[in-house]
Length: 199
Image: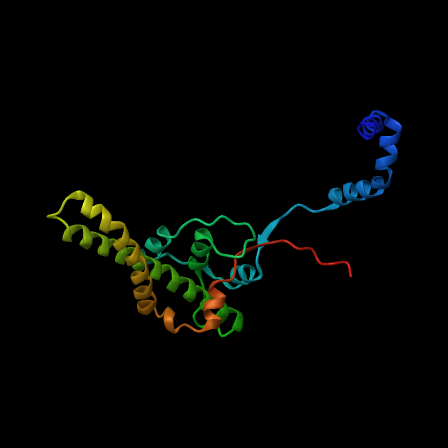
């Protein structure tokens, strides 16, 4: 009881409370100063995007397969901007480059565009195969009850996405793609700005 009464009396005294938190004052002031000087997160184009805009000579029209493949791509929620979203892939595919330009930076941009195109069109093959396999499974159970169709349809459709992904990679040549080209096609189009260090 004496210990509880003494603790209550300690918190009732404003002088003792101030003395208890006195060692923390420099830390709080330093943290407040650091928070005021921290720069907010700014999203800027990456180096490869700047290079593409520098060597591009115009706009390129999307083909039907590219448009359909972009339509079937899921949206991306960016936390670290380490991947490309649908708008970034569309921006890469709509750039036009000079096919006779021998500069290495133009070759890098063309290889990146070709890699992104393979990925986008392969996505169209994935959804087409999944829809085809799902439709065939539904038609195969046409003489059965609707419950039998609903049991088989989601599993066949989900399995069709894996089969379609493999078919799309083979048709577009992604299975034989060089690792360098695949790496170029997966570079993010936007990054967080990091100012140079003062060292």
